Length: 204
Length: 204
DNA sequence: TGAACTGGTGAGCGACCGTTAACCGAACGG
DNA sequence: CCGTTCGGTTAACGGTCGCTCACCAGTTCA
Image (cartoon, rainbow over all chains, first blue to last red; front, side, top):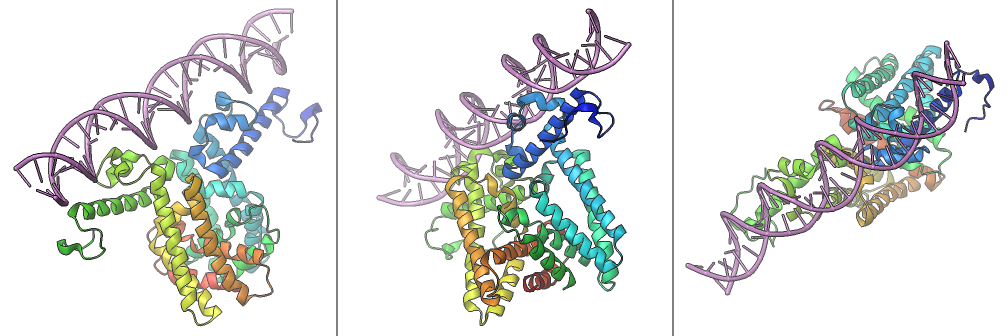
């Protein structure tokens, strides 16, 4: 898939050998296939044989890349949560006003949801299938992301209680995250519709 | 749970004998327990033994009330979809204007989501676990419900394309259906917040 | 009262699935 | 160039789970 040739393998250090590069590629393919399969059928209804097959290998080869089936799910969800939190923080840090920060958060989240519909689906589908530390990690990252939104909202609406603003933030996520359910391929104008709806809902 | 005593069993005809009444009660208890368990852990991760145990019976007794595990899920989802569609139609039929119809739909859906958080969770969690006719039935009912909303929206915004209005309706459902994720017991003011957000989003 | 019915139980079957084990061949590194 | 590493394979184990079977006890009803 990647158009990068071979020589030097400049990109990231630590991936000197061809084996390392092949392994990283396999791992990425597994994560991609897993996100799609989990989104389509749900985590518990995807077997490791199917998962491996979808990535070109078969069966227990997955254990050469992940410690368990749950670890695959954890990698997807933790990665997504971290990306969301990181991106959200960058948006807020670069905004010149609270209103601009909110608009930026909305635009960022809409872009993420449209570009990663599979991951969104997995996130509010199979988070319960995660147990132990991974679950806690994801929940913590998500809570921090919510608080990021609530902080901005609190500055814009100082009269509202934080618990009410949290409800507003969750409702806004639900609105934006509805794309995987509606846009079964179509609706290219979804971005602007969702952005305007989200901003109007938050301002109501 | 029901405070009704016994004699006569007036309510619905066809439930003359005590056994019939007991059976109906068991069935209802099973559906209640199933909705809660499926909402908490997801359909595939609830065993029939657990399901039975949660309703006071144990194990394969479920098969005296439902043909299969899927049939339990189907009963929950079909019932919910029918109730939603029926209620929505009643709201629209009784409204004196398109704007009132939309406001009524929003209020109705918010009430439903707040009163049946478990079922909402199951609906956008385990619908994929349904197969065959049941799945098709639920999808058809849901599509009709969406079209009910889109019809009202189309009258209020004749300039918009139906596909765009469908995106709006889905986004609105996502917003309202966010309650099960956010209100983990608290947020009693959620009703008015969600209603105003939904209406603002739809009008944007 | 006694035969038929029926909802419940416990044991058990068959399939599936996550995971481990034993082993193989190519790439790696001194 | 040779010993090691490592990603891959197939085979198999252990456990779970949906579902069926044989059977039992309390209702129902003629």
